[in-house]
Structures are given as C-alpha cells and as structure tokens.
Image 1 (tube, rainbow, N blue to C red):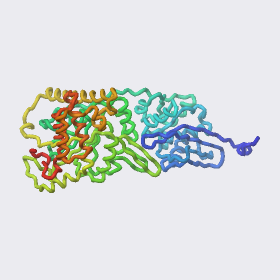
Image 2: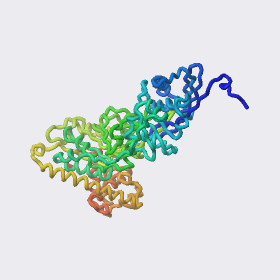
Image 3: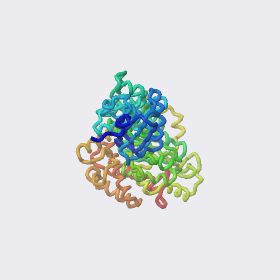
Image 4: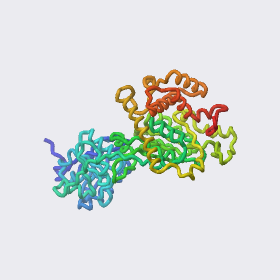
Length: 536
C-alpha cells in the first residue's frame, strides 16, 4: 500500500466540495467548488478559468475568514472551480469558496454540506451581499436535483419564489458557520405570495378627446400589436403610450417568473417584493446603444427589449434613434428572442414586448397642426419618414395619427371622474374579453399562440379568413399600397383582433377596412400618398 507523502511529513490533507452555479444569460451551469488544504507554507491558488471578479475573491474571502479566527496564511489552499473549461464570472461564488475552505480546514463538518447549493458575495467583514440572478440560479439547482440552498438575506424575497427547494438566508458568514456547527439555525425563506398587480387606469381616464388614438391602444392591447403614434409635439403621444400597460392583462404565475428571471439577471428586482408582478414598461432614451437596446456585453446582459418582455417597450422620438440600433430590433420582433454570441459565451433572452413608438410627422413637427404652420417641404417630410426602414415598418402593426388636443376639450369640464373611470374600465374589459377568445382558440388546438399578433399565415387561414368582400378589399389595398407579404399578414392579424373586440366569429369588410386605415405610414410613403394628419 502506498503512503501519502503528506502523511510522511505529518501534514494533514483536508478536502471539501461545495455546490454552486454560474450564470450565462438565463442559463445556470453547475459549479463544483473543490478545496484542498494542508498545513504548510502559505499559498492560495485559484484554478478553473476564474475571471477577475472571482480571482479577487481570494482577498475578500481571506479577510472574512480572518474575522472568524481562521488565518488562511497558515494553510496551503488550492481552490478548484470545476468544470475547468468553463469561464466563471462575478462575485457570487465568494460564499461557496469560503464555506468550502472552512470545510477543508475542519471548521465545518464537510459531510453536512452535501445537497446544498450556496450563492452570495462576501464583503471583507464577512457580510453576505445580494447577487444577481438568484431565481434562475435556484431553478438550475432544482433541475440538478439539489433541494437545499443558502442565499443572501437581501435575495430572500426573490428566492421565496423558487420551486421545490428549501431555502435558507444568511446575512453574514458567521451565521452560516453557526448553522452547520449546532448554533443558531439560519432562517428558512417562506414561499413567496404571488398576487398579480394591475396598473391603475387613472391616466387613460383623464385623457380628453383622442378617440382614434384610444381605439388604437385598445386594438394594440387586445391583440398584442406593435403601434406607431405620429403627431405634433404636445399632442399626448407619450401619455397615451404610458397608459398602455394598464390595459394589458395581468401577468400570470408563469409569465411573472419568466419576467422576474430577466430582471433578476439585470439586477433590477425590488428586494422587498422579489417578483415582477405587473407588465413592465421600459422607455429607453433615443441615444441608447445597440447592447443597451437588444442586450450584449462580454458577460451577456439583457437589453431593453428583453426587460420589456411581457410588457411594453416605448420608443419615444423614434426617428432620433440611430438607424443601426433600430435595425437590430427586427430579429427580436420577428422571433421573440435575442441571441447573443460571444467568443466565451452564448446566451438567449426572451424578447416579446408590445412595442409602442412615437414620432413627429415631419422635421419641424407641425405638419397637420392647425395652430402652427409647417416649414417643411413635401420631400423633406418624406425623407424624414424614410428614416424608418421598410422592414422595420412592416413589423409595426398599427400606424395612427394623434392630432393636437382641442383647447375647448381641455377647458371643458368633460365627463365626471366616475364616468371617465367607468369608461376606462369598460375599455379594459373589452380587451380582456378579446384576449380570452384568443386563449380559448389556443386551448382548443386551433392555434399555438395566445395572442393574434403571433398567428402564422396557416393559422390565419383557419381562424382569420375574411368574408369574400373583406378579402377583395384587402387584396385591393395591398395592391394599391404595394405592401409586402409581411404587412399583408399583419393587417389580417389586426383585422382578427378587431373582429374579436366586436365579438364576431368571422372577419367582415368593416374589420378589414379599419385594419387598413391603421397602416397610415404605408400610405404616407406612397408617391403622392397622404401624409400623417391629412384628410385622406
């Protein structure tokens, strides 16, 4: 039998393994934090493709352990992060490394750590700090068969929504040591309580006039259709867009968890609530970069289009965005996800928001404004509208003009607050009924999508074929306006939604007519066609 060289010299070899996870996008990968310790010349080796934040863990961990009376300079420590070929980033492995060291040097019973997943960043005084991505991390642990976890106290509310896991929360490294050595047990995180939250309808009930714009919001919310609002400055485009989330159906359990995971990775979770319980609303500035809008970075992070998933992405002053940035939206709007490929990592983020854009009708903003004269030539107006590429315009289902608000309407008393709120409630009720019809088609197996905006052409042939006069009207409009096949499909989807709002089983010519009228910019870009706000 061979004798260990360490045994000959009287040195003791301690081994301990702790389970952790590393995130890339929303995907969590199991990490085995393995520590070997022996008495001898001081060393602290960290192996396993650790990036800067992980390498710096040596300093934070050594300082935190010193406060517990563990002097790492008395040991030769080797910390291995397996698998060795996977890059590890972020400070979320700090706590796992510290716990594994404590097990290896005999300060914790190593066997008691089996079945635990550990996550958390350490400060130099041993405080356990919150980390990003706790919910997807715990989901990865559940899939890997682990059933117990230790997370930072600041992530406790979010961790409460993890399924099939017993989760403990820790505020300090000292609390973790006490838990495993017979001292004060760590508090168990109670299961999260999910109550869908609806945004108040107050804002939309206060909008005066703008009947056509409100109708566009109703159609957009009912079918999840992308929308462009054009109109002069001060006409209320931004206010209308901000009203839209209140009309959307509340998030259900599944969509809330999906949305929460995205926001968790981005570090945007409210630590007190722990979950995104209402449709998100994101409004990036027009100077946003491509990674800021669609996601990216050396360590892939979600962009605004993913942060607005299951909610609303508002692009104000659309023509002021760089065209190269806007063009990056085409793939997410078509496929419902963003794929990020880097040399060391690949990530996919869901990206299916309802996109609302707002823009002026011309460079000076005063075209069709009865109070101010437009200083732009017809060619300047068309060049201005041409800043939006045809393929991107095709992906916007509704194009609606928002005229200036009549001063008389602003000065009048208008309907009573109770009547205005009741009308807003009826509008949302119509939206919810239309959405229920669409979900019923999906549960009956007629379609695979739960909203009309996602219907394929073959599904539209089953549930969205217009009556003969409606079919003739649509064919004539497509021919006259020179629309693409994509625009044709989107008009059909909108017509299906309008019919659903009317409670009609079949798409009639009146539904097609309204859907075609909602393609304002397609008509405006035709030679000699009407510009936004004109009387055509």
